[in-house]
Image (cartoon, rainbow, N blue to C red; front, side, top):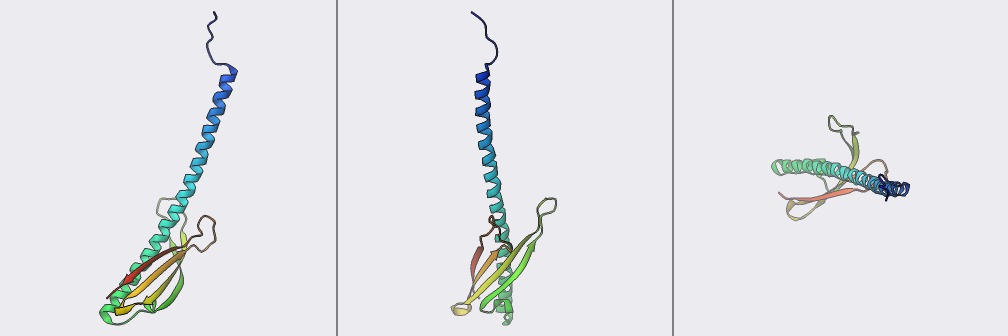
Length: 140
């Protein structure tokens, strides 16, 4: 009997094919995760912009309750759009993000107001074409 050390050419080819298929699957998974990260990053920034606008309107509403003077941003109807730019965090490679912000005010009973803030990207982009809408109810 001969002692055969090493691998045959067929074994090496099979190992290379298996490794190639595994690496292609891994590459596809990485591409999908990058795309999901982009969606989540945009959603997070858009939500931050909407929350900031709601907080600003809440502050104006509090001033109205205290002084009796209503700010123009709280008048019933549609407002905006206004452009909001978020700077990229320091030390990152990110670019500033622009958003259009619109809000709608509806009067409710008892001096309450229903606020709907909608944030959209200014540039049509298949990866960022959704809008984010947050709603809140202010009461004196």
